[in-house]
Length: 484
Image 1: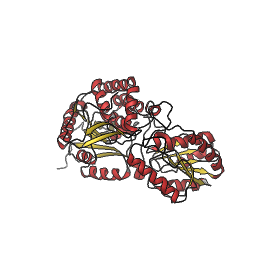
Image 2 (image 1 turned 45 degrees about the vertical axis):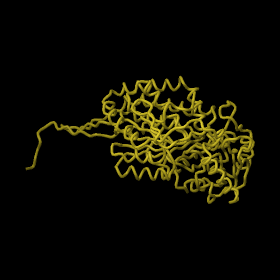
Image 3 (image 1 turned 60 degrees about the vertical axis):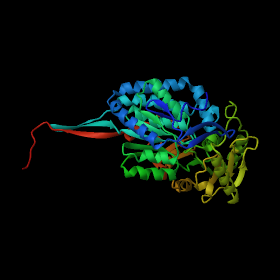
Image 4 (image 1 turned 180 degrees about the horizontal axis):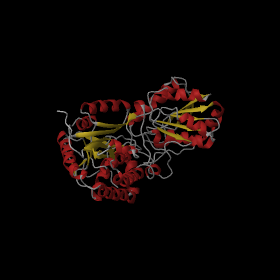
């Protein structure tokens, strides 16, 4: 599969180009090579995309949900049938190992399409008896939705946002991250091939100005963003000006609490998955690993051995465990955090440097121990393969320290005491939690955060509330009794 798409944008059912837009170079993170060149959307193309979505949405909303569902189900089947080609494209776009993109990226997107295809025909209203009179409710689509994607799971995010939007009768204009612009275009192709009417899913490329143009358009009813907290604050404020619905899936500094009765290998494996999967570029990662003192030395010893056995290399090689960071800028940011951790007195257990054998943006899996709550790597989101291990003694201490952050996206607990597990999870201020597991995000379950980590939920039945609105209809069955 070639990385260079037919054109930069997909609007009203077809590829569209306008070379007047600023150039976007797509870099393969494993080598630093330019693999595609695209152009930002001009104001004229943004207008075309929103106009197409507005026109198409009216008829789509009037389509029977089961008919909408059939199209999404066909698209899901196509994604699965083309899994290897799509995985390869995702690896080129993001630098993630093909062993990941085969199972975690597009497959999760296909699951979302399938799930919401099944859910859409079951979305109904209710009747409320009032004696002789009654009220009935209708769940209606919002209208035109804007999706703004992040670069870490670009194709999964495009599916997670478009699947509920389309299944429930909305249209979407989607802006991928300028760092990873390729997957959303393939999704747009697949939707059309599956029978989706033109104009319902449009892809426009660009940086922040393009996103701003979309979210402030008066025809837009909803904005769904996956991104950083600073970006989320700006987008939320801009959306609020027009009283638009919002879903904000933002960053985190999530705690993973390991009690000393936890299974050691499970705890180590979970901590590695929570810090090194996708080279640590996962918003829900458990990057503050709180280890009860009785487990600490055994944990660090096993962790170091397993981390040093990880294979870094060509992401297209089946044997590669961890690929590069997504960009040179991200590499510089992560290395800056590593240098700061060393300067602030954290104890380096393993890693801590670029992977010198590679030409791309590779960083060794890195573990710091003896991290304290006031250190920078314990407070700020690194978004790279850097684990901070913190000691704790008591359950109450772990809970208090875990909650001492502006973030509230995710949290995990490992313990053999299931009563304690539920008790601790019940007190953690996080929207997405795990007990004796970590970072499993099935589409059946709602995903989202508390506090600065966002508002709203993606996936599960909860997504229905965020892509529809309720209309109440009072039905009078008798004469009107006017007092004048």
